Amino acid sequence: MSISPWARWGAVLGFALGGFFDGILLHQILQWHHLLSLVPGIDDLRLQVLWDGWFHALMYVIALAGLVGLWRVHRRGTGNWGWPLVGMVLVGFGLWHVLDTLLSHWLLGIHRIRVDSDNPLAWDLLWFGLFGIVPLLLGWRLRRARGGPGMNGAAAMLVLGVATSGAGAWAMVPPVEDGFATVVFQPGAAPREVFAALEALDARLVWNDRAMGVVVVAVAPERRWDFYRHGALLVSGAGVPAGCFNWSKA
Image (tube, rainbow, N blue to C red; front, side, top):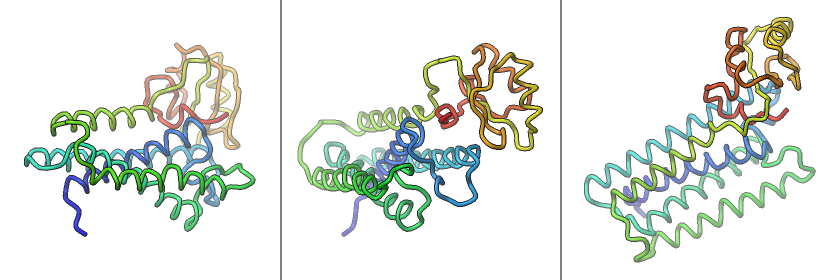
């Protein structure tokens, strides 16, 4: 069965929104897993967060492709901008979670929904049904709906653009200021250099990874910028869109 362009691009956009939902909720807020949590040899938090960042960058590209495709459909004066479009976005959203479960969780085994669970399969199946199968079925039904919200093409593009931008921007929002900062030092930085930076900025070490490449420190907010003068690559809450770094669990 052929799928019209507006339906195809709506599903592409929904697919990206599913990826944003997964990354924001599971990687950053709940911190149940990282993209490569179960890949042997990648136990450095800096690498885990780096790959989470590449994952979000890919979702940006896919979302942009979906928005551009829908805009072109709108410019041609075609497309169904009511509930059917909402339905196709839901289809793409559900498709992301179905593919993520089948490929990432079960076939490749690079992560599970909750890597610290005694029964990871139960969490996989719950997520698969709730955010995969349910949106797929609901979206497919809405695809054939009549009536619904009377959005024209321009209004629909505005709503979709705002929703997508909001989802992407949320990945870069730091938590409420609490006096702590996550600092990622450049590769090759020795522990003595890290401790020298802490001493120079009157910062207290709260947590560090095994290689001292990622540290959580208690430091005055106005002094966070100064870590860049002492070999830092990224500092959360210091004006740099560190994304997942801001949510790294201590």
